Image (tube, rainbow, N blue to C red):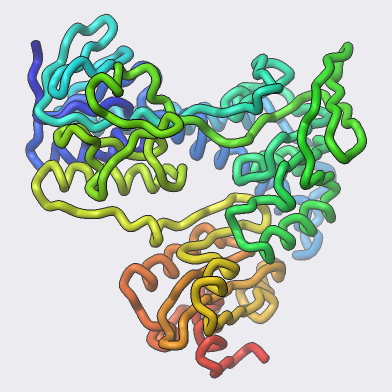
Length: 456
């Protein structure tokens, strides 16, 4: 039986980051993976979806080129090439992770793992592995309502839709959260007739109501139909189409359906956790403030525990779990984990939403600065959007939200400011390059301090 200091179940952004970090801290490490190295994020999530969205963004830029005095004529979408490019990027990045494993002497064990005892795992086809410590990074998989079943051809999960090879004439998306809205924008850009069905009263309910409304207006302008406060009652297959019956809305006919109502943890196949003394709640593994399960040498990270289902959160968890194995005893702080949504315009946030901050702090203060007031946004032709600073009377950052071009990159500055506990007045004095989109943050901070320069 091979013995390791650390065995990790899963090679996604939590597992592989933890493995490399552990190896560089001299822990003999193995990663057990039953599927493709890189997990959901690399193979069926962040990377492939953003690759397609990047291609769609190029198409949008070409269509808007006349605004810049450039005539391009008609352009044609080669969707098969777009998909091939996505696959090439995924393969190249997956090969990069494999190279990092070899360079750091990390053993990659292929097969399905099950924890047999606090220090032993059984792997299908690979026998037993002994480990002083174990990290469960088993991730999550697409969920579906009870009355909707994936078939991989007409009714698609967020995994399935990445494998289609032609643009559907029409697409109905069940679920108006992050994944649903990103795919809605993508296929609308590519020419599909798109509709979104959302059970709650607004899109992306995890964001502020203001941003939800702004995105809905933007989507409607682009011709995307939106049905909020609606649920799917039934789906009937017809020759060449699907008929969806909704509660409180007219029936919808479509070529394809994408179901994006969330994800469910993958924990049922990694051993008898209850018998081992590892508690789960609705499938998610219960951990303490140091990411330990009830067995102190077994940790769990990423999507299989509580917290935001984000790749960068899983990577953050992975480093903290390894640090705690090394005796550093760190606690995660998810209040500084940013949310990034790759719609057009993009949406990003960190910390408290406006509604939550107002409920918790009666004297909360909100300041915004519009993209229209930013010189770089003007010359880019990207005037839609705003940056919002939410703070307390002492000028402490409670939350930040940005809606507009480049938001997913720009939020990094806000995350740094909040993590470093930089006061909003101090932030307003930070020199920003000109002309850049980053100046939006300085102007929003100035507005919070009642010293706006380019605002009113």
